[in-house]
Length: 183
Image 1: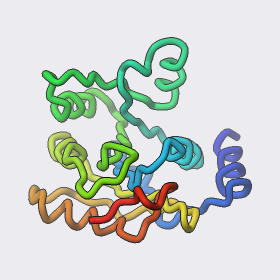
Image 2: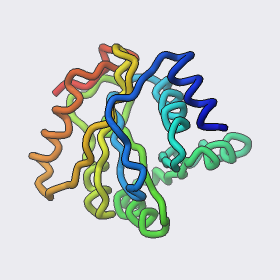
Image 3: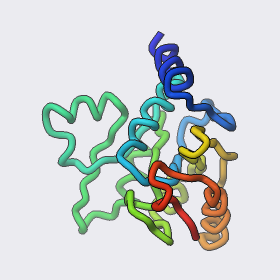
Image 4: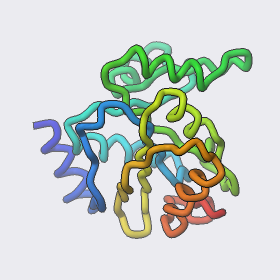
């Protein structure tokens, strides 16, 4: 019932479509969502996620998990992140993967909603350390579609792998096209 409502809202009323297929049998992975140009991306992600009967997690700064918003964010799959500089984020997130039976972690490798010319590398090293695949996903506002690319296994060649992954998103336009990713 809930998924039917999300499908009605996302596909029929909002007019979005999905290109590609999400392999729901993959229980642990890092989803990289590009481009991240607006707060609206969170809502597109919520609606897209709601069309699938699977759990998808996201990280948010721990300060957001205070009452009353915290309970909602946890219910939505949110995981509080301690942004203390002394903690190794990759190690901490990899440990979360170890402790969970299902963990599909959605991240924005751009690390901000502003224009960037280089991604942050954390998504890659999290996938590598947790030994999980990466599923690239594009939010293409120009064509009102979520593009799901093929599952990618890191090869331990960061330069080559990141160049390939970044190339997938060259034609994808974000909500704020001027902030969309370009190499």
